[in-house]
Image (cartoon, rainbow, N blue to C red; front, side, top):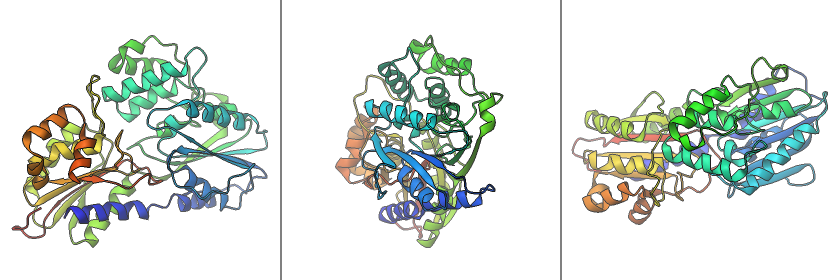
Length: 411
């Protein structure tokens, strides 16, 4: 069963076509093709999304693509197209340089030019532009603190928008003419201002909202001088339009279809942003209630609060799988995988487990790795890690829980 789950996960990733989504999104726009287009793509799916723009009838004068190291790309690099790579989930010096170049490109447009912005998951870390008075080191410390404290992606992005000249509509403010953004959402129920921290979108949150998040998760930074983002009432906001071309729910739909082709009867659960511990309890209950041949599928963006003293490596998918495994009936298997192929600080997309895996690991070893938030080493050493490499896809995490097709089956 575990092998079938991994095959289904890989099948889902292969089925997601970000290039076609952008190409079709441009074709659906009601306006005639603009005379000149300047294009920016930021995120884990940036190369594929830019490929879709280049395949459209639009005349792209100049383009910048910013993506993580290892992301596959076949784009024709040259004077008109720059491919920049930076770090994720924590930004680095290359992220700052990428942010500066993107802002300069927007500022080079005229009122007659269109700025096309293509955003996918990971954009927030890949292109950074800290405001004056807040150095990159401080921004990195804030990011690290929020990650470890278990802030949700929505809370995380609320702070990011007020710690940047690029996010929170900063790119729209920098542009001289109209702005169109096509978004591949990696935020469950997220609005445009949540996706990539909203480089083009007007922001309904305030400095006070961001400060409240800091006060809750990282009070040592609550007194930082935050900046106002682009408000919906600002004049520049009227120049921006955005369209979501891919959403996380598609991941669950494709996952259900893949399991059905493999012989299971699959039910899609509502998306979740609950914590890892809450989801682990839910999956343990569901595992006991599944009939033979039944499966449940969910797209999720769980939070995981990590002990600041921990030096372990891993991510929320691998951690969730490890926590769930000992609570599974012997004929049930569970997969948790990050669609981008990178689960936190691990080198895996996630993990696939069952009760036999937990028994082989042993209670003491299992508890030790969980306590140290070191599940990457645990899965790497026991063959449960899912290794895909950077997928060029990012639509949250996919969870698959299945029971064997016969009641006497063993996982």
